[in-house]
Each structure stands twice: as C-alpha cells, then as structure tokens.
Image (cartoon, rainbow, N blue to C red; front, top):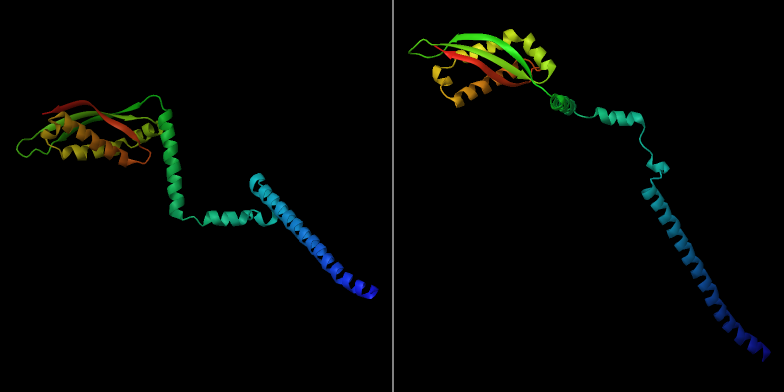
Length: 197
C-alpha cells in the first residue's frame, strides 16, 4: 500500500509542481517583456525628445552636403542671388530719407505734327533715392538725353494737351530711363518746364 500511496502521491505532486514551474516561467517572461518595453520606450523618448544622436543618426560628411548644394540648378542659384540683390536694394531704398535730384539739360525737338511744324522745349529733373543711381544717371547723361529726345520726337502737340497725357509721357520717360543702365533706379521724371510752339 505504501507503494500504491507513493504512486498515487507522485502523479499529484507532479501535477501540482508543473503548474508552479509554468507560472514562474510566465511571470519571468512578462517581467522581461515589460523591461524591454521600458528600456526601449525610454530610449526612444531620449532620442526624440532630448535630441540624442545615435550612431545610425549621424550627419553626412561635409563633402556630401557640399555635393547636395552643388546639385542646385544654376538658374535657381542665379534667381536666389537676384532676389538677395533686390532685397538689399529695397533695404537701401527704405533706409534713404531724402530724394536726390539730377537735372537733365533742356531738350528742344520737332514734334510729329503733320500739318504744322511745332517745337517742344522740355526741362526735366530725374528723382532717385540711391547715390549709386544718381552717379549712374550722371555718367549716362548722353544716353538719357538721346532716349528722351527719340521718344519726345514721336509725340504730337496733343500728347501734351491734358494732365493725363502729360502723366503718361512722364511714365514713358521713366521706363526708358530705367532701361539705360541696371544701376539706374529712378523714382520719377519731373517736368520743370514745358513749352510748345
């Protein structure tokens, strides 16, 4: 009977022992998984929130960055440079507190009237903001006079008959003036004297 009791107690003992070993194994696995999540989550938080750099997150070498900069289209680079120059010019204009005036020698021309021979005597003043523009207008004065004379010769006496038409003439003269030299950045062309005969 003792052998039967031993045999009977052994299967029960083994049945009770196995669940204890299995539950300990499961508990260890759960703890290991939880630790892995904590370590991994903490590392991720450290990397993304604190800005830590890991070996696989290194910046490319300077040569590679230069190569990427050189891959920019030359037209795009030229456009960016032009935008920088325009912005600098706008800053200089905004900083200027007073206008500079450049006198233009009197212009006497035949007008384009068909029936009657008419002459126009015009005295103009060019308004600029930047000293560089003033110097450019003075340097190119022969071109300025030529551009103004050619345009005024194409006009008739009626072109000076109303305020609106005179303002249109001023706008056209300003456009021609600003095309003479890239350094010329005139604000206005002002009439000082206008005589039609």
